[in-house]
Length: 116
Length: 217
Image 1: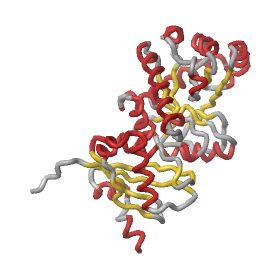
Image 2: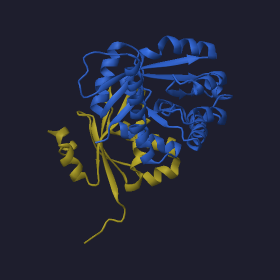
Image 3: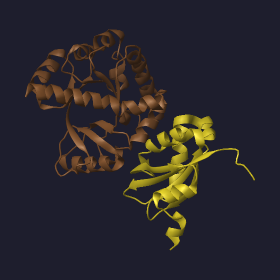
Image 4: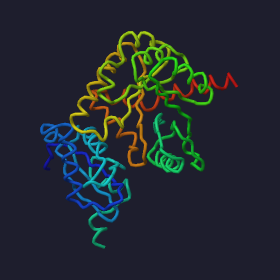
């Protein structure tokens, strides 16, 4: 059975903003935020990845390495604007797998929700 | 579930206060101290009254404390000068000491050993506002982190309780409790202690003040 070497954490977040930012904007802001606070080395340790984002619900799932969840949460907390519009990114739930995160939060695949 | 407490919300208007307190309740806070009171909040959240005093002279601080102490659950003093910081440190009517985040005002003003000795054992707390760590440029943030860390090292050596608050002035600046705890990673604070800073330590302050105010009434 293949074993994944790096453990991950998955965070479900919600964007609060008057505008509707797209996936690219969210990802750019998030990466910049980690880099601003923890630098390039921190960015490589956190290794964030935007798994999915639904523009309608303004909710998304982001991944980081297992022991850097605190750093990612701090980085999300420091985001105060997205493309010049005031915004806040708040984590709703976190989990060790995407499957359990969706089950716990009652969210199905966010992308599927967008297309339906 | 932890009993999370945010001891510092400073809305600009009563309408904002209602929105912010409702949001704080949704985010998992069970107790909030606000500088402006609001009605119509659900009963999941308890709201305490807070007064932020800013003074440059100790005489002004003493006058304000004499006038206001009995009307508020929590009194915090923003120490704009060394003189005020010393007075606030030794005055029993003060609950929380706060220092400005402006590097210019901080140049000759920090939590020093003399103040720490005056505070030691009194139950006064040193407050870290998460808003000071948010919405700052990189250079400003670096300075703020240095100033807070310098104060924290003195506070910890003298067993001064440290409180973590949001310092939010708008709904968008309120963060969930775990985000505030995560932000303390910038100050090299252990996660367990950071959790106490936003739950058990403010709870002790509120309980003590409620008992005091009940006795006086």
